Image (cartoon, rainbow, N blue to C red):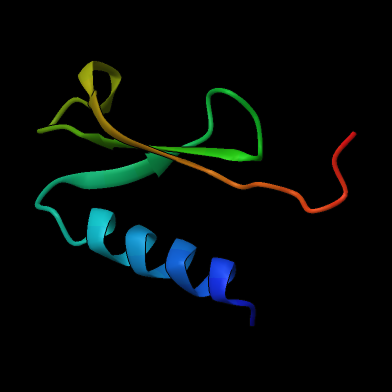
Length: 58
């Protein structure tokens, strides 16, 4: 696992440790949006965005 992947996993774990937190992918598979919601996930509020950067870009 690369250092970038390790950092990504640390941030993902931290975000998902928040009460009521869940991850969503409304912008595609390369951007993870973390939201928090009570009983109704449809009203979830975004609190973090984690992007995956690809090395072979452009």
